[in-house]
Length: 342
Image (tube, rainbow, N blue to C red; front, top):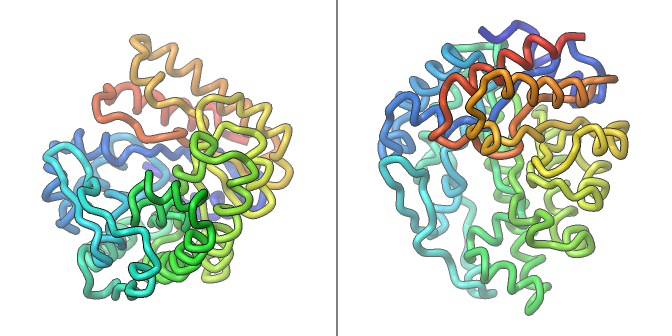
């Protein structure tokens, strides 16, 4: 089971200090739901089932955290975004909002205690925290403002705004700062130790470094600063492997979860003195490993490249596919614990 002191080690890593050992995280929720045999249509609406799935996952795979991240739309559905959910797939948008000033002027902050699935998420976080106390990191999640605008208006229409109406985009992002600070604080009040700040739409696959700096960095860092001041640890995730993007981000966050298409040793050499790094393990690559010895070798290489000097947390760069063999995940986490000590 997870070790007592993991929250202190997380905070040490966030400060750039050396923990007692490397915390072992994974973006495994979709995989964990599959292992439990749960129906996503029930999972996203049942706090009891969320707790059951997460307790079983920690017992089986020995994660050092639980990131409760059923989907990106929990706080957006009360604003009018419509979603669909499948038996084995998380919710996805089927109707977004018109990208207009009229839409922005009509938006009202939802009430996390009553609106949509927000209270269900808070109940699940609270019960998970009650079950584990301080023996495990419990993390909630918000979307960073740039990605929130894209989710509200649809990714294509949201990105077009960057070019066609940058003032409207910035105004929408400013409103999303307020939304996500409110929602993040509600999750911290419910018992979360950390907040996952997701921003994949602002990554290098969509934005140049200059565009990222102009439209994404400032509003996301405002959310991060507000939640850190409220007492939470914030993990920023763009899933990026682009050093120019990561160099821009490093002064503004305490932890950045990086992508798979880079050598963590090179990223750490460039920015590791100014920010804690996590991520880099490629879950799709690992899923396709037939030999568990190869899984161990790859994970050991990442851990031993990331841990020198502290300021490092093991994590996958993206989500673990639900088709992954459980033995692969077991090997991954146990390898981190075998070679992650200081």
